[in-house]
Amino acid sequence: MITIGIEGTAHTLGIGITDSGCNVLANVIDMYRPPEGGLHPREAANHHADAVASVISKALSEAGLSVKDIDLVSFSKGPGLGPCLRVAATAARALSAKLNIPIMGVNHCVAHVEIGNATTGCKDPVLLYASGGNTQVIAFANGKYRIFGETLDIGVGNMFDKLGRELGLGYYAGPTIEKLAKEGDKLLDIPYSVKGMDMAFSGILTAAVSLRKKGHRLEDIAYSVQETCFAMLAEVTERAMAHVGKDEVLMGGGVVQNARLRDVIAKMAEERNSKMHVPQPRLCIDNGAMIAWLGHIMYSSGVRMTMDDTKIDQRFRTDEVDVTWR
Ligand code: FE2
Image 1 (cartoon, rainbow, N blue to C red):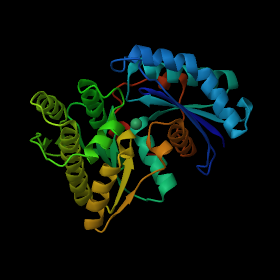
Image 2 (spheres, protein in one colour; image 1 turned 180 degrees about the horizontal axis):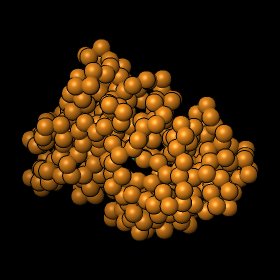
Image 3 (cartoon, rainbow, N blue to C red; image 1 turned 120 degrees about the horizontal axis):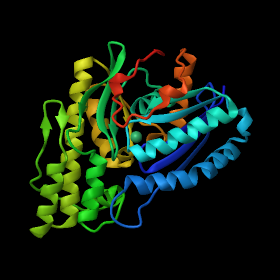
Image 4 (cartoon, helix red, strand yellow; image 1 turned 60 degrees about the horizontal axis):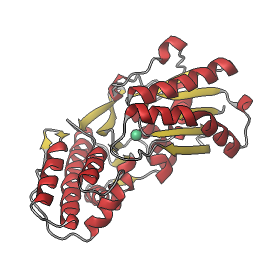
């Protein structure tokens, strides 16, 4: 069974194609880059609408398939930015109607877990999902993927992006902050914001900007922000692992590209006699292959959707998904 997946929750338009064995036959990623300032949902959606037909063609040619070979179309139903989600849903509905094939709207966060399960060999992990739009600690418990901790305000990646803009480091500043942090050695006073099992990142942004105004080095600010945020993520992930009694941690989301975050989590896992699993970089960031794969396993477990079920859901919660395939 060949499934095409359309990812469009935020800045990334991704088209992936998978087969029944989770072989990724194509995984084309086309990221919207704002000319200046931050990401405007409408402009990102316009980018996706302009690019979607050509990115689908590119994915088909990468897979060596024709559009007639597709058996199922899956798309990111949520959570995400409304205008972007609508483009992905519209493209999926058009393919489904034109090819007369079934359609599946899937939860983006659960897709991160399932592509990790299928490609890294982990069985029943706690997922640390750290990206621009989302920061959640997720695990399977009592029949559902449940959120054990999450950000109360902005995603950690979004905080890095905002900090990058404030400090003049450009958009998608994560890699620049990581590079600067390697040269930092002074741990500055940044609020460590873990509240119960949840986290907050906007106060860290405010503190970091004010430290810069006081004349601190960019390197020390980047170092302090990273160390504080990653310690927070490790604390919440570790407590979730202890609470649900799991000995695997799976990483997902764009912030996982940061080697220091992987180091911190790997150390925590090692100290708990647990194992850290990291999907390939292109399966870790937002991508269409994970959307295709989750659509496939949902369909195989008997889930069916009509066009009426394909309405997007900007606030689609991880724990709203009925896990029929485990
Ligand atoms: Fe994501």
